[in-house]
View (cartoon, rainbow, N blue to C red):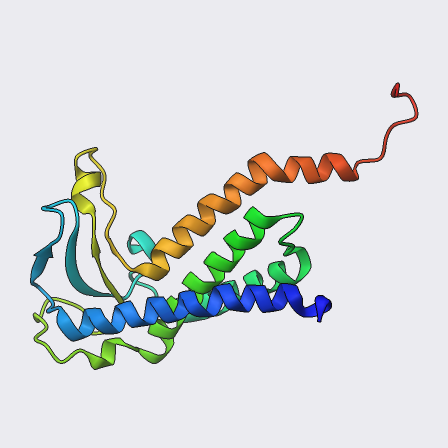
Length: 193
């Protein structure tokens, strides 16, 4: 049982996060209308439903339809491999949780891209100039970034998991991974003890 504990913990983190992402997207297509905006915190947090055919920050907007699902599938495989090879909640908790978040976020958006779900549940009107397929995005915090002269886009829970996971992985690599390398580095014969 102890041998499989790591995998049980990984699954118990990843699966609920994917479910939360899917439930929020289902709620978004059920209760929001494309083209309408619902302010939560004024202009700084709004609910705006869109269907995004690109990746984050509109990367890959003009790629063929199969490319982004294929890349998402490959990244899921990479994250699973890294979790199996390097995942360790005792020695590398930050890095391991970061990979779990990134896997959940990538897989959540992979479901959208591959099965067009939950976008297919949307029954409201779609303006002619907007995409009718793609990942369900609905959280708009653009005004925060506009105040600094930047643009961020509309996002979903999976996108936030990817962002938080990426930052956590960078923190792990910068601050904690060095300790792992120092601990494994053999002492040089010339070094004084």
